[in-house]
Length: 119
Image (cartoon, rainbow, N blue to C red; front, side, top):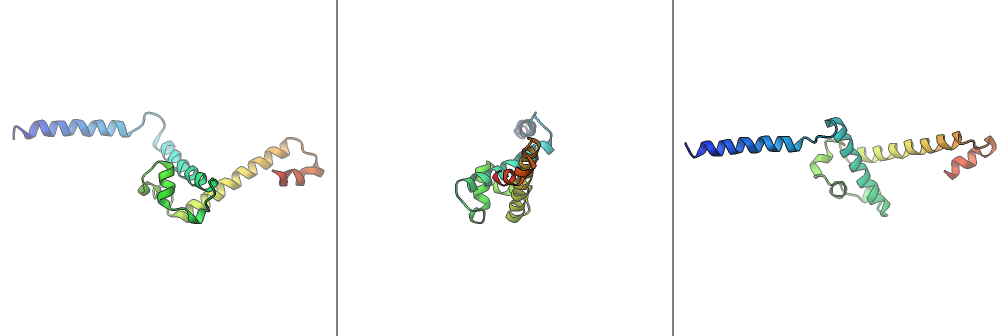
């Protein structure tokens, strides 16, 4: 019994240290989750940018690129299709923002369509 007490004490201290180091000092849990979700999207886009098609990507490749374990993927997306939809939505948002900025920059109405297509 005397041998077990120091061991139990050491385990208790190590659990406290692990708990403290797992919780980052910067940002809330929601912000951290959003950053991880963005890393997954960025990882997929990086692989697509290297010439791969989305359908040829595997979940393991994407999570490896994002620097997370494969099981963590499912905390953010239910499947690869949901990730694909999120990527399309991100692209649409970025495109709408670019078009809005181009229109705000004073393109003459006669060149609006041409400018939008060029963007």
